[in-house]
Image (cartoon, rainbow, N blue to C red; front, top):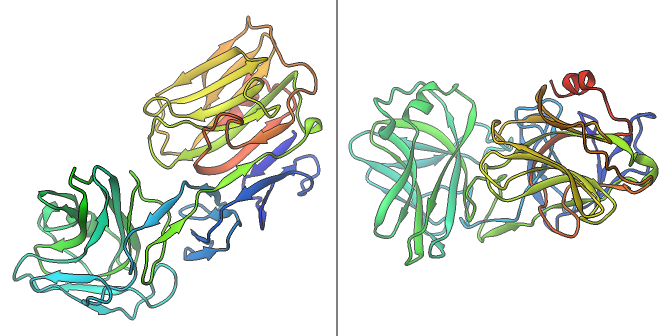
Length: 399
């Protein structure tokens, strides 16, 4: 094997993500160049949200004991006081009817005591809300962490919900009643709802509403111009932006075999999108590459081999949910190309005789070089094999 990344074996430092040579099992000379010009958050091994320094890669352990590399596009939390739910103009928080909030003494998702308890006596429809400016026709997502602190018995989904009011258009809501009824007491869960701002733009109002008596803890309000919720961005008086992340170029020609090999990854998308997101071995151009990428159509997973600018192998499927982790492998070898996902053969070519010249491939990238299609998502593992594994080995690898 040549370059390997992840599988619970992570090495990070400022501006670098360390891959390793599997033959030695140590990190050396296999660095990805990494940038993110702001701090960001991750979930650590203890299950707590913590801040990661500028230009340091994030290994996230949300529901994952081995961790995964988290790569996200830029996002801005438009809510200026994400953790302050005190009813006041200073916090930007207001209420309707008999809703009240009080500082909680229980641990929040970051391990502090900075959550608030939402309390409603059930006499009228009640809500806690924040007013936030947004652009016309913008897609926005509101997310919030909620912890059930005692048993709930909401009679229907509409009895508790998060939503976004948008001027005169109807409220966009995500029912929470049944979800909270089924939730584990003492466990923080992040809920989100996505809506499109109307053509007038202006103010939108993310809110938490209940129609029945309730009491539970709330933390981390976030409103962002994305179609999905990204990692938590804390704010305390102004909007805050987390910059996009780049992670490029590991390895050298001696780490790859251009005449035969396998590119393997275990990845999960942040959303089901037509936008391209790519992992590849290449010569630093778009003309010679072995690629695995997501996008182009809903739930599409595709592999492509370009040799001298000509397509040698191109297969795709839309059978798998890209928002789950999938194990994907492509073998490149003259008269023996193959594409596997989760133990199943997706496509092959036993007649294509073209293959790269020796020493053509010289780098592993998490983007399509010279084109774009930067990979944003979750990466448990990437491997570049220097031999074309057998079908039986590929089935075992991807199962």
